[in-house]
Amino acid sequence: MTTAVKNQILAPVQEFINKPKRLLIDGDWIEPVEQGGFTTIDPATGNVICEVPHGTHHDIDRAVAAARRAFDHGPWSRMRPNQREKLLWRVGDLIEAKADVFAQLESIDNGKPASIARRSDVARTADLFRYYAGWATKLEGSTVDVSMPRVTEGEFHAFTLREAIGVCGQIIPWNFPLLMAAFKLAPALAAGNTVVLKPAEQTPLTALLLGEVFCEAGMPPGVVNIVTGFGDAGAALAAHDHVDKVAFTGSTEVGKKIVDAARGNLKKVSLELGGKSPNIVFADADFETAVEGSVNAWLSNQGQACVAGTRLYVEDAIFEEFMRAVAERVSKVKIAPGLDPASEMGPLVSQEQLDRVTGYLEQGLADGARALTGGRRRGEQGYFLEPTVLVDVRPDFSVVREEIFGPVVVAMPFSAADGIDAIADVANDTDYGLAAGVWTRNISTAHRLARRIKAGSIWVNQYNASDFALPFGGYKQSGWGRELGTDGIHLYTQVKAVNIAL
Ligand code: NAP
Ligand code: MG
Image (cartoon, rainbow, N blue to C red; front, side):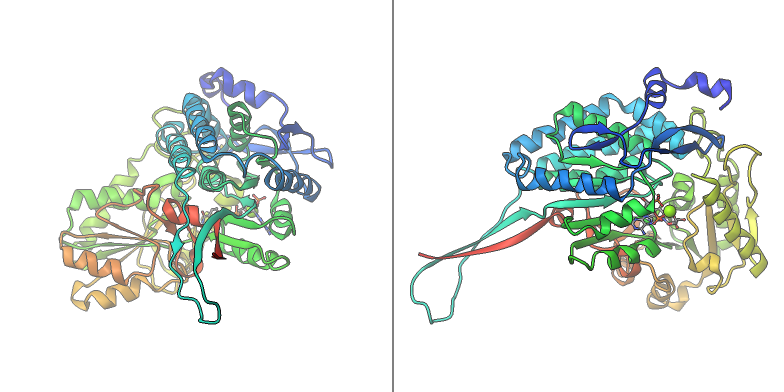
């Protein structure tokens, strides 16, 4: 790390980095069973930030046992809903109070600009805990007027109870480390579940800081357990017989492994997986807004977003002009280490991810694609890559079909004369179905495409603005289940029917 950047690090961030890290199990910070750690890297420099504990299946066993006790015998599931509500609200407040610390730590560990982490990832995380805090007191069953078979005469009182599922294993990726932890933890806890969280190996730090926040907020022991480690720890969690539900966000490839691992005890499974989302710009759209919004659609978070609008379809009448404007816009993006206050785009998360993305670029160019801008690594130090706009692509190219997870967009013209169904067919020509964007002033076009596109989120004349009250998840191979909103609570509860002969 250069001295200039080091000087910007806040004292509490440096303190957190310097102190030894442990696993959070049963309310205590403890060493892993097989002593040892692994390093986490600053992607802006490639330098080691610090060591974190290397948790293995032994630690998953201990964490699951603690979560089991806390659920089966502990106070959490039996606590009054408003006590859970207060505690989750306090978590949100504490995150907000430490927002600068969380933002810098996220930036150092993941690479994203700290200023963006501060106003987006961290602010949204605090809000998400408060959103689900409110749900703790709003869980309801219903009474049902039954028409039972005539074998039993008499009156009945039938109703449903909405109950927590139990011990939840939660496995999260590195692209939004803190926010993804909140997507998983907040609804699970609001509903009265207990949790074992496995953060991504590349970005374990904010999850550990979040663990401290839970302790400070007064979370009872065993309710939230955090085990840092690699894929094998995630696999042990997904397969564990004493885990009642596994929730996973990450690649579709690992998502399928989670499904296999869950077979043993048929635990509930929810999956939020990859995407290759279409973003469709009509000639009647507001030009400037559509340029800005389309860039945000694929470049946000260095392009490392499951919802990224990476297949850009632009109506032929404006294709050339629109793509020139997009290329010009992205060539002005300020690429710099995340701690630089002027940074709009940081490095990719790891050398592995940089290699993966540049591999796709090489393949795309070899297939015949042309880069309007970008395509090169920036600097010798860190994992910086220029935003890259590819044109002259065909639908069978790997850069068009596969999730690249980096700052790369493929752009293709379409003809509005082909009709809405044909445009929807092109948009739907993918194994994924996470999100889609439509830019038009024609309300009929917008609504008709919104119905025809097979994706969990459709954004019209904006991209990426989602709300915690709206469900989020994927069609097709983009996942199972919906997080956020009412659906997010349903993902962490199950319904029991009680039928009483009076
Ligand atoms: P990944 O392997 O799917 O990792 C996601 C999480 O699953 C991490 O915590 C990972 O641990 C864990 N994991 C890995 N193997 C596991 C297994 N067999 N059982 C249970 N958990 C396991 O994703 P990645 O390797 O970090 O990234 C690869 C590609 O996935 C990216 O290039 C991108 O295309 C896609 N991706 C998508 C999303 C999304 O939000 N949809 C997020 C991240 C990545 P480790 O960290 O130790 O591997
Ligand atoms: Mg991995």
